[in-house]
Amino acid sequence: MNTPFSHLFAAAAFACACLPAAHAEGDAAAGKLLYAARCAACHSLQFNGVGPTHKNLIGRRAGTAAGYDYSAALKQATVVWDPSSLLRWLADPETFIPGQRMSISIPDAQQRADIVAYLQLVAGPQAPTPAPLEK
Image 1 (cartoon, rainbow, N blue to C red):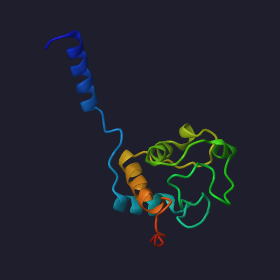
Image 2 (image 1 turned 45 degrees about the vertical axis):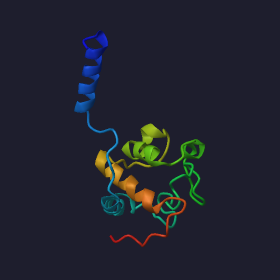
Image 3 (image 1 turned 90 degrees about the vertical axis):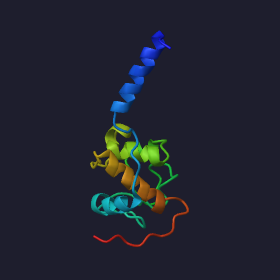
Image 4 (image 1 turned 30 degrees about the horizontal axis):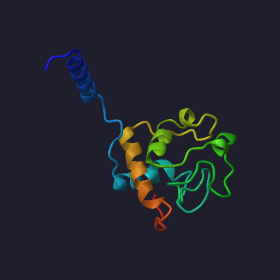
């Protein structure tokens, strides 16, 4: 059928096919290595450090890990950490929550997805206590 909308649909389908995936599939094993290399200097799955603990991160409201001195921006944020919010945060923390203090971002979409896949395994509310990371 050749209607004005068929051309629009074809153009939209072509444009979508040419764009990179908005949400890459994460590999938790790769994410564990990336977490050790990119995150563990400041964060732990057991305790607060330079950054807040990631224990029970998934499902937790931003700015609420006990005992950590958050920025006012994170204390006031209404974000609940889930895969979508973590991907946005890791891409550009300052754009996602202006006024926060994390100066590190993960520009590569696949690396972000891998880190989030790992966090889903080890940082959810029912996650087992993970073994210490090897450095």
